Length: 265
Image 1: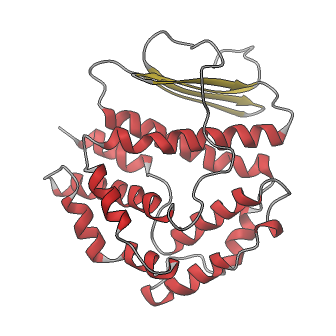
Image 2: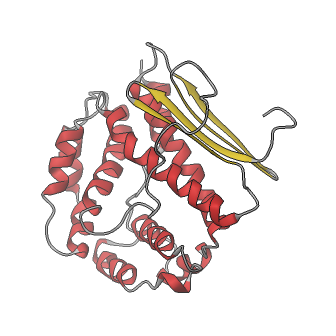
């Protein structure tokens, strides 16, 4: 990023009917920074599935998500089951075994989000970014996320043309979400270490232990781990940690998409 660029966070996307552009300059207000980051996360997570339709049957995954019944404990156990893995494998458009495995990892995260959205809140309360509120930094179709605040400098950008595969756009969106997931707690005052300690374990748990992890999530009191106004954000982080412990992910893994693109002939 060139010297002299003022502190900011900016997200812009211009592709087909998707047009959004916004920027935050008041980086001294940590509350505003956290809220803007939350909007960015909500925005990219809502768009990722449509950019995966060339590699997997998103409609089929949505239909699969509608079939999970019971309480949250039963649902999480089912999401982790081998049977669910086989169903997801059949919904992925790839024959190569190694490439298919990468896409199944992605499909499972999509399924987790679709499924759990029926039972708990998986997004931050701010909603997504909407409208074109600043001038686009590039005339071409693109997705662009930049931030500068102190030592934090990030540029994640993809100029989109006819040769750009949709899955590459999904990869960038997932990467932006990962950046936000790492940075938001510091600005929101969320006690990530406290949330991890709440669950009491650090490694993936056995199938028989999944209900107890879900129970810990259901008993989670976010006001003990976040300041007023960010309780629901802390609850999302607690859900993310609970899923991590049982071997599931709330977030589409950018690394899996990156490896897929690298290895795909």
